[in-house]
Image (cartoon, rainbow over all chains, first blue to last red; front, side):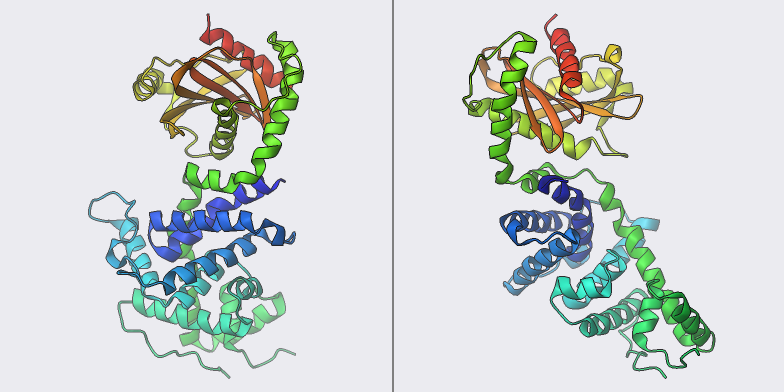
Length: 167
Length: 252
């Protein structure tokens, strides 16, 4: 498979992750485009292996540096998922909005781990590599992120983690 | 035999379906006695399911052309030009517009045509759910719509004799305005796309030219105010046969 085909094949997945990460269709595609362009520029650095993981790590670096830049509104909050038809959300759409709102309220580092593991099915090791952190940090962020999202979706305050070391 | 201690990492690995059988059983046994954690693990699994339910549909959306173009990048331009120039020699004679040793790269107006067409083909031909915007069942509407948007009468050729049926068409952004893409499919599910661009300047008729980009073969030509490109992942002689049929129908 050529470079072009290999990268094109990853686009749908990158878009899915970026959509969940940013909560905004246009911003997500901007992020994907930046990622693709940087990946092509750095293509010589890619060693045959997991192309997806490498692209996620590039996307992570771009996303984090964008987040560091001051933005008037960091995250669109209630205006997530603007590609939905403009009518009162019902059923699936309502659930989608709740989930997107919950994700938006997670700290970025927890959101990234939760999505790479839960949505993209990366192994904990590959998630650690993509984010440039130790596996132990992946696990603690995963734990906090899941617990926080659970609390957010349940409509309550983020509960104290029940999950210390369990004997 | 079975460790009594279960740590939190293992609970997550269990929720994510990443434990080996032995540890999975150990965790299940442990969870049996810890209903509160059983509940938490069940909720983590539901979170994963909800994420997939919410965001998997993005995977089925048509990939925006700007992203496909970004993935193609500038690097493949050179091989494409080279391929086009080389293959022109081979094809020219077959079609009867021999280029006779012309090895100059294509002029800019035509250079981007096969590339854009190949990208559009690569993006939309694998689409299962949304291969076209308007299906062949609404051919009259398809013709009227695309003709209106391109500002000229436009009819998709019929390729039944070549074994291909019209699937439908879509409108795409081109470099200088709207572009139409018609999609065809044969009995085996193999797809062809005909990319039709309207140029602002009248150009002389050009020869059939051939380019191959990343497995997609493209025959393209200019004819008056239109640029045409037929793309398919098939052998050159087969694609040429169909391109010739397309050309003949467009120029009866």
